Amino acid sequence: MKQVHYYYTLCLAAMLLASAACNTSADKSTSKQTATETERKWWKEAVVYQIYPRSFKDSDGDGVGDLKGIISKLDYLKSLGVDIIWLNPIYGSPNADNGYDISDYQSIMKEFGTMDDFDALLKGMHERKIKLVMDLVVNHCSDEHEWFKQSRSSRTNPYRDYFHWWPAEKGKPAFRPGSFEVDGSAWRFDSLTNAYYLHYFSYKQPDLNWENPKLREEIYSMMRSWFDKGVDGFRMDVIPFIGKDTTFPVITQKDLDEKYEGRWDVYFASSPQLHTYLHEMNEKVTSKYDVMTLAEGAGTTQKTALDLVDPARKELDMSYHFDGVNLGYMKEGFKRMDPKGYHLLEFKKIYSDWDEVFATKGWGTVYLGNHDQPRMLTRWGNDAPPYDQYSSKMLTTFILSMRGTPYYYNGDELGMRNIRFDKIEDYRDIESISEYGKVKKAGGDLQQFLNDQKIGARDNGRTPFQWDNTANAGFTTGIPWLKVNPNYLQINAAAQESDPNSTLNYFRSMVQLRKKEPTLVYGKYTLLDAQNPSVYCYTRELNGRKLLVLLNFKANTATPNTGIDLSKANVLIGNYPSPSKDGQLRPYEAVILELHVL
Ligand code: NOJ
Image (cartoon, rainbow, N blue to C red; front, side, top):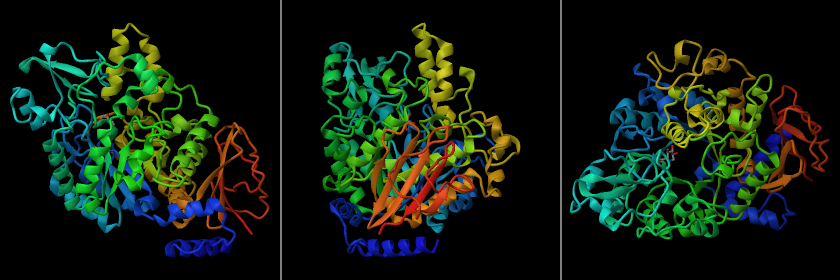
């Protein structure tokens, strides 16, 4: 292990000084890295942990997680070693879409607590050197927001142009799909003023009109007020959708197919005004603070992603794509059909191609789970014993050894898995409920739909955090808003704390490894043995230091063909008690090796 520390110290020193490379025989690709490396940023080196507040910890017995609950777990967060917490929306909201329908951007949702609680939470995080990133939901707000109440009250109201209205005397507006509506339309007729309003999501989430400079200034001033409190950044909800062609032209299927890959989300994300607004936001707000910005890159593609995050454009810092998490779903549009497994070759290609997008500029992200996804272990690994432990750790190794900021979802460190509800009545998510309504209306196969939801539904990832083996997994003393997974008796944080081989402690070790290995953060990524159907292997390389990551994604033993002599390699981490050193991988084995480069 001495060798490990030697290389580490040497390379870190080189990075910190941004000086000459450790390796004097630096080739062209190494100098390519240097461009990225000199743009060191705290948000590139951070590990982000996402908390879904509704399901994390309830402090007052109402069955809903809250801010005081998170405060009570600050030491747990510190113990994970993570640097940034991203909190899903905690603002005033009637909760049609669990906080993604905001009725007051400057208050705290009653169920979650008060502004004093928020201030205490932020202070507690900062005292522990953890940064806090909030969700910014500004493509739409709630129909219960004062702006919308005013706007809908009359055609001449000063807030009318805060939203997109289509007067009914012009006939029906051109079709736009509305995600969470059984009728599938993003337009809702409002008899009060005889007009339709636009809502890309549910009718409770009217889209804001970014063409209106007054609206933009209101958003910017709201953002400043959170930054002035000390918030460290925003994750921006469906932000590519804010620019719209407000003439609302008819889009034919031919247009969609030819210009937008047949995808409405690509059309929604394609307006040139988007970049005008984001640049303006950068100039007027985010550039004035030391904060990070992350786009939920809905509708963006490998061709367009850099338009958001190329630093020269002065828009946003990072973006997350959907190509990875959508693998297996896309052929059915947005419906979360049972992916029936996925092909590792496609998976490897997607992540490798995305790495290439940011190879010389911009910065990417890596994630396998979040509140919009089922559980990582069920979807991408194998949640059945005896493989569950191994595959959970293997996926954790993947997320934390790729280039790009890792986003890790709460509960995945415990190996939490899909709950697989049998009945629609168990679901709380507007998406599952509205999709069920669509299938029913169309006379479709409801049983098939429910089977598919067992894999793909968002509520699988939203069940309460499993703290211990007491009632309701220690999440609440009341009735949980969403059922707790009955496996909490075995799978819970308390049981894993004391087990050195637990998935929880493996996550901690992986976080520490990433933090002491700049090579894992900034190093060049090279895919090896691309056609291997079982193993994902790649090297990470920085200033002469080279690491090899070997991940067996299958339940069979496998041998990657890396062409690398491993006889002098050192194991940095592995998910089996005695990690393979010869490249032969057991089921779901993950190992990171330090190669001795001369
Ligand atoms: C993306 C969010 O992540 C998701 O949870 C929400 O339903 C939609 N945007 C609408 O805000």
